[in-house]
Length: 315
Image (cartoon, rainbow, N blue to C red; front, side):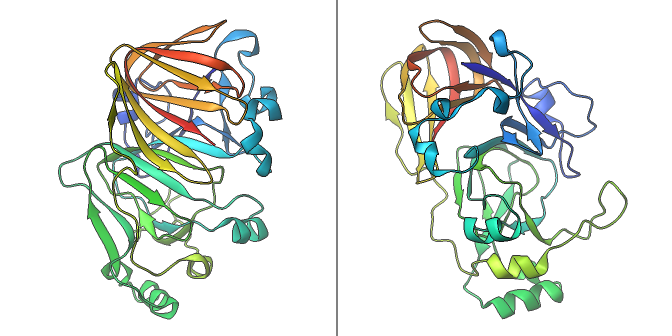
């Protein structure tokens, strides 16, 4: 089992809740994102425990550790983040695998969001409020009326959004969330509120590519977890999503949860509240809010102990 050190990003829209709420330490003025499971070239986790302490995760993991389900992927399959949006993120879209591999030489990006907390009137953008043509989409970008066509959704703690590649979207200010996504950092900006970047210049837009990949339709998915909360006495479990890319569940434990890592997939545990321990046959890790643990495939039985809430992800 590997306890991972997060990678921090200081994007202009970020706040400081990842420091104040999660106890993360860094020297950045803003901490917009913490990449808590990443083998991406733009930010890789390092291992905090054991004989591999200090090494990058990508230097240590093997195909066997990833599991048989990862054999269909050319790269490490997922990237998991915590995101603190003090201000609005840009209106943006991500390409699918075919377009991204051809044009960006990496995966496309389908992602999902689990709302950890938010301001009372926080909202985000999720697709369009009605179907429009690509020509209408381009025209609205060029004449500055694109926000008149988008679907604004008021959010609350516990909401869940599945963002298929090609879905126009934007996280709104006052939202703290966990994001599970394909291992990609390709984003096409459509509108950025005329802001200036850290270099004092407007951040670039990617209008042609965005028009190419955007599905200009109303969202067909709900804003709720795919499964109902299941109560097992000492803990509860809620299925957020199960798709060909990943399966994501939220657990709330009062005492102990017994889990299993078989040969099909590694297990990612992201702790979003409380503190406790993760115990396998040969190892014990202390964890707290913000801890990220990578458990190799074929580890077998392990347990999470303590009064904790965590997100479990497999592929």
